[in-house]
Image (cartoon, rainbow, N blue to C red; front, side, top):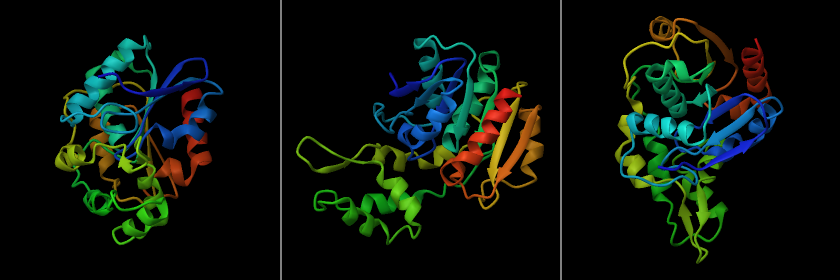
Length: 253
């Protein structure tokens, strides 16, 4: 599968992987910051953004997609940043291919099983009558009955686009994501460890990380370092400049 990606900047390669229901669009501004020093590749994972849709959707195929992407683009030993689902993909790739990763940054996810909490969001997205609405504001109103946070609603609605006839459609493969949602909550697919330098950045107001998770993390990523910001789960969106500062200090260290 050929993944869509955006590339900017020059220097050592840095790959960025978005989370569930996200896309490379969400990382455009931060990509510009990182591109001042790195050759940045912001990837749309399968069933998201402008990448192809597929009936398969789990960490095995997401990891294989990343392997093929790196091979096809002749990328050598990149740094990798992954948020949420993208962080799980990045962790699996690093454990499976430890010699192919330089530094790893994982944003607000840890290598354990989660009960995926996005089912209400997906239910809300499915409830929007795409064949009836004519404006994004109508979609936002329909979604507000399922998600009270305006920022989250706006994030989800970035997945809306129009087809050639002007009708709203989803860029994400919503039926397949819905069907395989619990697979995205899985713990690590691949066994082993990654001995490279790794940074876990967590949100103080997020419930994806508990202090006891550090023990598990250290078993798989023995050189793991930890940092946190005063945010919820979408760290890079809530505190972009603070997030960028942590990342650049870690990569330059």
